[in-house]
Image (cartoon, rainbow, N blue to C red; front, side, top):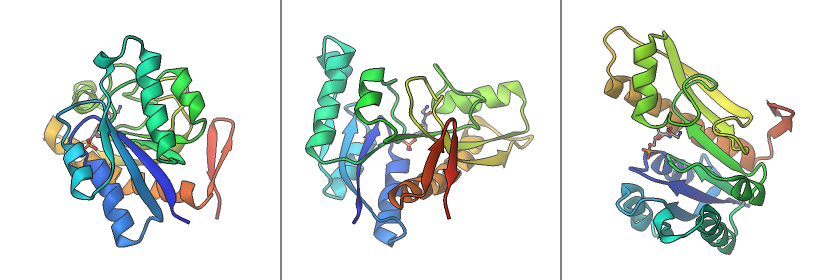
Length: 207
Ligand code: GAR
């Protein structure tokens, strides 16, 4: 049985595309049942439309309280029978209310080797700029479960890339993104096949 995914996005949606491509190739037994964007002009919504995936835009400014905004997303995800929530470039920090509605059923992809260059304020290209400014020699991509903190949940998969002397935010970001596109579908696949075992902070991958 295919795993029902709900994908939360805020931007161009290349990670969403990587998930869709893996499903279409047959390497991921899942279905994207719903896409929710926190931004009206997110290109990810166009991708959802192209594949006939139900898609919604839920804007924080339309709700008085964070909880009401999140409740709308929770309702949509539940309406579409979502079993795993995938944050794929979703630029809004979720409160404990949302996290507890899908406990251990939310994963996020982050463009660095957590716990470096993560947390509040570290998102998108800002991460790569911080990596270059600091001068570290390796960075990478992480897929992790989402807990009540920001980028603090248990790590599922991580892979490193070398930072090159002539790297720019764009060149480094592109190499990390390529990794994300491999790691995210792989992590979803492991979850779908029941291969992830959470033990404290550690996620063990079963054979
Ligand atoms: C990705 O690099 C993702 O890791 C990052 O935003 C980008 C979204 O790209 N997410 C974060 O920084 C979250 N902290 P996409 O819209 O093309 O998938």
